[in-house]
Amino acid sequence: MEKIAREIEKILEEKQACYEELKHVLTQEKGHIAAMDVDALWSTTRTKKELGRKIEVLRQDILTLAGKIDPDGEMPDFSLADVIKALSVGSKMRARLLSAKARLDTAKKSVAQSAQANRTHVSRYLTVVDEVMGIIVNHSKQDQYTRKGVIPENRERNRLFQAEV
Image (tube, rainbow, N blue to C red; front, side, top):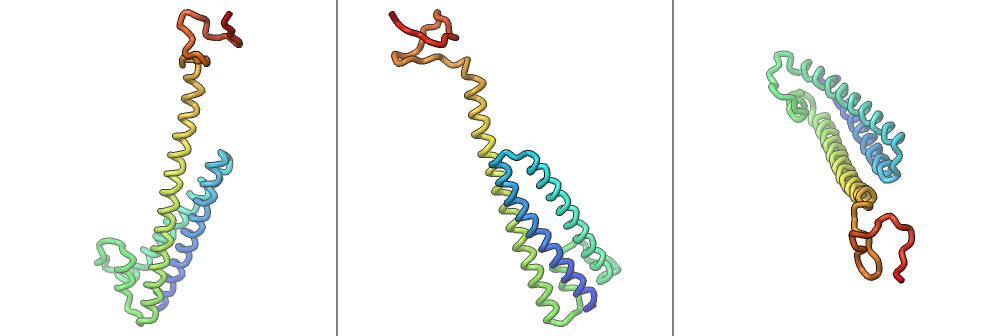
């Protein structure tokens, strides 16, 4: 069981490193959004997908090890806390695993907060772009103004200069 516990601890550390790298990528992504760097956004999207696949592989590795702990499959739902409880290891090893789990949970929350901040940033940014585009597209449909007010409808609208005599 000690060997399995050490393997789980190693996987948890790898998983935490993936989440920390994902947070770094999300931070870079926010800058790419502001700079409207589409190539860099595609690159960060690829990196995020690769990290997601790696995290899923690590999760599957933990499930495989959990199957070694409980070959009868009596743990109905996968819970890392349940896996740690099911291990028959010393208190020091259990404390190390619980500490690794706590660090992993913190990293997950940090990534979730960064992702939410990016979604909010994108939403605000697109709202501004939408408003600007609306002004540009609808400009010809808006009434033309002078210092004395609106130009009457019966006059031509596409004049470069206008003067009253």
